[in-house]
Amino acid sequence: MLTALRNDLDVGDGSGELINCLRLGGLDMSAEALAALATAGGAAVVQAAGTDAWLSVRLAVARLLGRNDDAQETVELARLDQMQAALTADEETTGQRERWEAVWQTRLEMSLETLDAQARAIAAAQLAEVVALVRATQDEAHALPHGVVAGRDLRVSAEGGSVAGAVVRVDGGVNLAPPFPSGERDIRG
Image 1 (cartoon, helix red, strand yellow):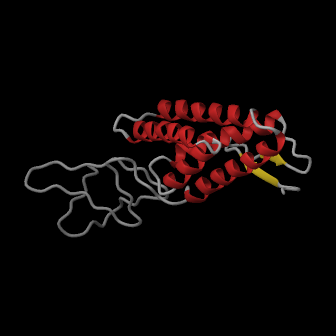
Image 2 (spheres, helix red, strand yellow):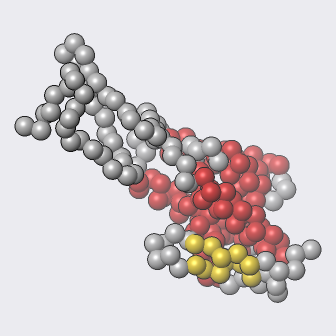
Image 3 (cartoon, one colour):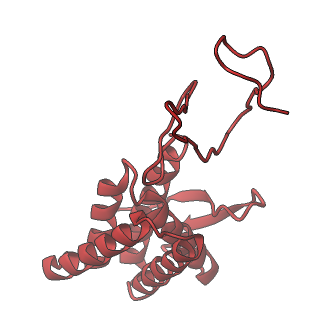
């Protein structure tokens, strides 16, 4: 049986402040801690879509919300798949990600609120594990649809009068200074 668990969870609000999210010594959880955990959970579900962590997150969230009911788990899996398909579509937008985060935050918070104290503590610990899993995989680089991840040099070129281009997001630095390798021109005007 659970006797004590303390999990400090960074809800990612940019302040770096840690929120004491779970306090299971007396199996009680404040409304604020519940909301913080649900917020982190909703964000984690959306962030996991399209990543290597998706299958694990998808199953864990469906089990959490399904509460050992196979039919309800199937419904939750369909909802998760709907979100994942929407987020990996070409027209995905930041507003859509925020909307889905709010949807999953609300679903998770409502689900946690309906549980008795002991079941809530167990579910909260499971949700905290999902959040931790997603955060552990965030450091890995992954490309958006139709994108590429390069750990080093990436060359985009055109031949025979065609045009080539790329949209680049750089985590680090870019050096465009001469000298360019032979055959390439400095186009800085």
